[in-house]
Length: 200
Image 1 (cartoon, one colour):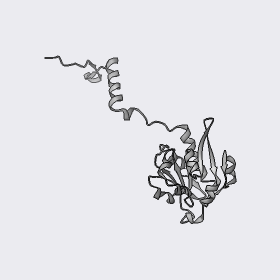
Image 2 (tube, one colour):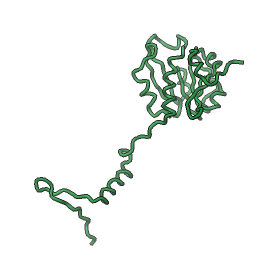
Image 3 (cartoon, one colour):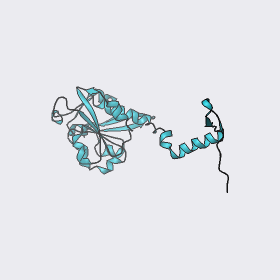
Image 4 (cartoon, helix red, strand yellow):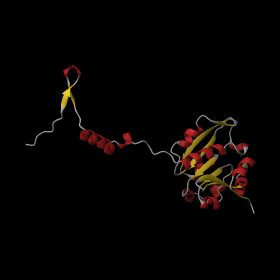
């Protein structure tokens, strides 16, 4: 019959015995934690700097857009930023807008999966690849600022498109699309855009 493994002990205070772990034993314990309890050992991956900046841009866009008055039920109704489909922000966007007011309005963040939910938002972010799930008419939705990342998004009439220039986040504006949606974009915002598309 095989011998049972014994744990070495040494006297503790009060004459009690306590286990003594060698270096090998400790390594095995740590390895077990990494394999079977990884969720308690590793923190969630940090959001990339790129999406931290994009979240900050989304928040700041609210300060430079005039929506049609009928898009709000009252003077204190919140501004709604919606993320359509894939969410690359990992909680950063909610954290950024929490407790902030723009022209007396709070900012709510929502996550949506259906194009039918878009009209209830004021800004809709569409991650690269997600624009294929939207009908072309969605990009002209009245009173909705559409923000995306891909060339296809821009070609289909999205209003603001994020780009990377020398590894820095920049954005383009389709002014014709913003006018079609009934939005007024501040001149300051237009000056910051790298490209402005105007109606022919």
